Image (cartoon, rainbow, N blue to C red; front, side):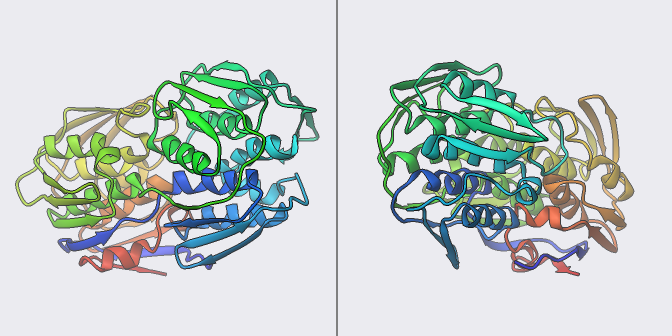
Length: 420
């Protein structure tokens, strides 16, 4: 896919209309990796067209899997794996590429990979992954900057994670579904994307219970088959568009939006004065025309707490509301890299360690910005929607890693935005 280099937008347009929320990036990537475990064709629907998903598909191709996209459907033929090495160039493109190690180890009992890349928002060590693989019987060595994982056989184990790491939980699940015996993951991550991965694997023949709780139990099976599966909707994209609607004091209807997975963000927006209604299980209505007030404190936390990925866009919203908001970031130590760019727009934000104090102002002005990471770039778009004049955001490739046709989506509800 071609990637535009910058985004330009002129603030001052109220957003009104309907947005269909894309499939979840953070679910699609581990499910794409999980296809490696299957012996027959996998078709994934609602798979978002993103640069990260494109990189995952190129990894699948490099491993020998046939892989093609038709609109929102991706078809994978994993019947034959011809390589167990993930190309270093693709590893550097996104951190989620490490998730292929569990899948390859589970199916082929070996894999070779370099250390992953992606957004530089803080330390995301893979020590938990490696320790779990070793506990299941794999040997792991470091050869010239590459990790080599091998196992004669993988066996179930009781694994207690020091922290409820999403990536480690997913990687252990992938390695465990074809292992001998039972694997227990204690202090497992509880994010909705974990549940989505478990539902996909179960449909392929895996035996998994407890996904979405702190204890996940996997009973190994001898083989997985392919299936047709629909990826869940993206709760972070939904949160982003809700904040975009709120900052312009607009009115939006989001379809294909999962109410339950969005609840931690919805409760904060309601506290701020937004009117939010759900229609069934997959539609959300936002009305932000009333005077909004800033939330006194936002503390990010593992699910079901407030998601760290939604923190930057909510901060942009708070920067436009008179009053004081305090943010405490508990997940990633460098999650405030967008702050200096928001300040260029006139935002009043002071950062001390993991705490950011936002003094909201009613006037922001357009400026030349550089996206620092995926969600930070989304925060700049959010703030730019009400900044006077033109805001130009460079390094837009970060943004396209997680948002499908974001300019087209926002234009459809009234934003003055275009790619450059």
